[in-house]
Image (cartoon, rainbow, N blue to C red; front, side, top):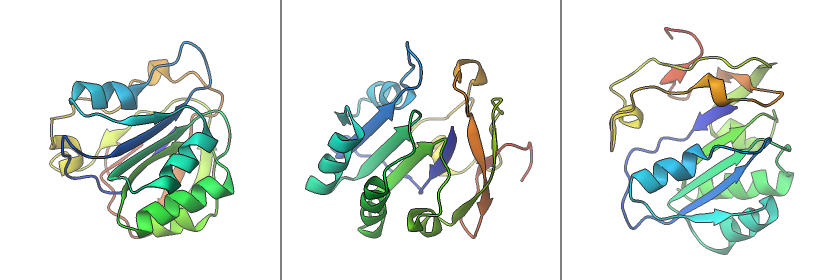
Length: 170
């Protein structure tokens, strides 16, 4: 999975958080909801992309987490995510699918190539709040559990803040 992060630097225990986590195999590990629970944060979990999109459009959210591993996201979902960002919301986005949708332009990334074997992710700026707040993150990814056919996409940074990547140094 490719991870795109629109800077998420502070969390509040009363934050409105929406999560969509779609699997490709069973049993599936749910890293996002596991982390939120470990942090003591409450969240709303959508069980389908349509339900997620409807919930996203129905109210404002402080943080939205979208993890789609089975299908390419619908254009309507990408539109709703872009509106969320435009409105000042925070987003963690993860998908195997590439797209030229304006959401990615807004996030300052474009797609390069895909890969089918898991790659380690290296922190380039370990002092960044993404890796230290609210807790120190000791390792970024365990590639052993990433068991799906397409493992991710390489990105081109078009002016965003790059704090991690597939190479040991930026």
